[in-house]
Amino acid sequence: MKLPVTIHQARFGAAEFKVIRPARPLSRALLLDHDRHLDAYLDQDAARRIGGLWKLAASSPRSLIHLPMRGNRPPSGALAEGGTRQLDLVLLHHSLQFAPARWKEVRGRLGVGRPQTVTLPGPKDTGEAVIDYEARRYRENRDLFQQHLHAETLFMTGSAKVFRETARHFFDIARNGPGYVPVHPNYPHYCTEFHSNEGVLGDAREIHIEYRDRWEA
View 1 (cartoon, rainbow, N blue to C red):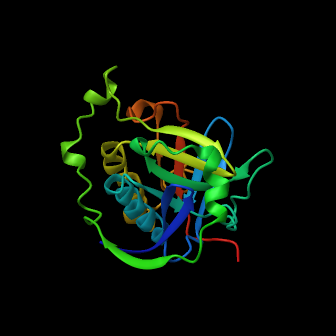
View 2 (view 1 turned 120 degrees about the vertical axis):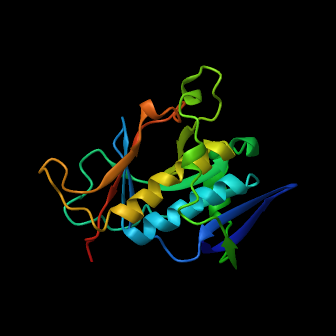
């Protein structure tokens, strides 16, 4: 899987931060904050590219992966309800120890960036066959996502393992969403989620991810 990105650098005194963004805007992607949970709406292209960026986060522990989307139009029939906020998303490895409070300043110093194409394992190589689901339930499990919210941005912080193993959610949406045929009126769209029972959420809210192919112009 080849993924076009742009590489950005921001310097603060002796500190320098590397920020990676998708080369093309994720125009059909939306992340909504519902206070108790989060909703994501994606078309096929956005789901496939976010799956790639999720894998890139697993292999780039010294980088911030920034997915700008808070200004996007919503999909048809899924207007943001009262009390919700549209968010950007940043993926980062826990070892980076980046303080989200610095994000607004870092974001403001990013230029146009340097284009680059990264090569990642394909969507079928999600490693799902070797996931130890039982081990996720152990108290000793440290491969958990933590979330922070700052400057209209959701920060998903985790280990390489948890990013690598959960990228499958997005490839699942890209693969099965377009051909989904509703069989019950309560389930009109194909979806998946980061659920508390999955064993990957530490101090983090559940994320419902839904496929949508019709978006407002």
